[in-house]
Picture 1 (cartoon, one colour):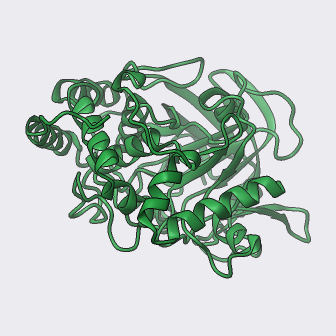
Picture 2 (cartoon, one colour; picture 1 turned 180 degrees about the vertical axis):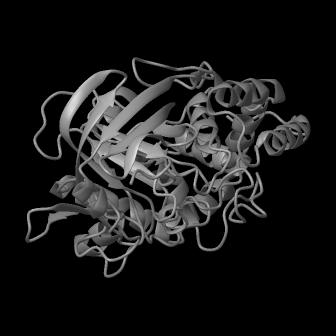
Picture 3 (cartoon, helix red, strand yellow; picture 1 turned 180 degrees about the horizontal axis):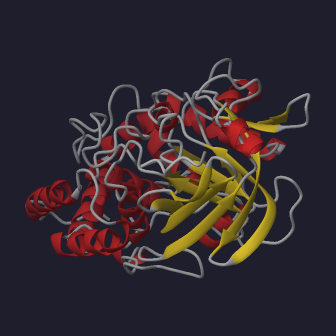
Amino acid sequence: MVAPAPVLPPVAPAPASLAAPAPVDDSDGIYGLTKLHQVRLELAKTEWGVLQLSSARGGLAVKGSDYVQADGRPVHVGSGFGGYYPWGHADVTLDGMPFKDVGLRYRGNGSFSNSSGFAPFRANFKLKLDVFGTKGAWQGEKSFNFNAGVVDTSNIREAIAFALFRGAGVPAPRTAYAQFTFNVPDVYKDAPGGFAYTMIENVGTRFLKSALPPGTGLLMKPEGAQGGIQVQGSGTWASYANVFYPDRAATPHEQQRIMEFCQLISQTDVALFRSRVGSYLDVDEFLRFIAINAFIQNGDSYLRGGHNYYFYLDSSDDKFRFIPWDEDLSMGSGNFGNGVDFLTPWSGNQPLIYWLLDDPVVNARYKAILKELSASVLSRAEIGKLVDAVESVAGRHGYSPRSFLDSRAAYLQQLAAGWSAPVPR
């Protein structure tokens, strides 16, 4: 029976002109705020059944890694809760372009925990073309993330958040939207997945080469790093690797560089910190990263939590940069952002943010960045255009963050109007 579709020099302030706002639709062949793709999936009934065994917990290897079961089935372990996500065999057609025997699995931490077995399409998916050896790519891409709006029922917060980061000069994934059609013999026939899924660019080699060329540095995705980037455990590299989760083996130089930066953050000599932090960190980019997180009140981020960001050691200049991830609990979705303030955005033990903003020179630069953004990418007019753009594709579902964003933009403009003092040079 076919079921119906379930519904070490001082920090030098950088000129504001270095980070011009990105256009509303910074698109390429796949990504763009107003792009809508068609994804058709076909799975054997047994493969669909394998996917339904997924669990937010229960993986048997290192978080964020993959392993192979005794029966030959590859399994992904969730990076947050250590979830069990077996890869299923599927055939997929992407905007009319067919690919045979690709990998499909569920993904997510809290979002997967909140999805329902009675609505198996309303969960986040990962699609990877080469899991089972399939050749080729879709316009150069092989890995795709699709979010179903399980936590963010408006299904536009992530597209908006990443666009704001990019507009502020922070490297961040691009997005598009996709409509799914599912076919599982004796289960689903041409079943629509519901309203559009948010399609989020994979943060990996291709992203790094484009956003942070040459893209050959060390990419890490910390989990459980309470207090953010600082000394971990015993201080040996193993204790760092067990929290920062590098995507490859770190070289001796990279290991040393990471541990030195963490030691600088964790020590309490203010003069030493201020004299050396600029030799390790792209301070201007980090301030913009913090500014946008504060604007969208994303407490489930570096501001308060130990995850939902990438930490990157850039091979081009040996400095660290931050890349945002997982924005569905921003803009008033959930209570993680309650109390996040522009000028004191951290909570608890977050020494990197605290020591930076404790420096009068850096603090003034941070205010200058906020003031610049309040007149550009974070202005009420630009925010309105951005929301209009994504809603034109995603539709209107759940509670829209439009009024939240407009209120934040008005508040920031009011604050910035009082920051008339010149920036120290």
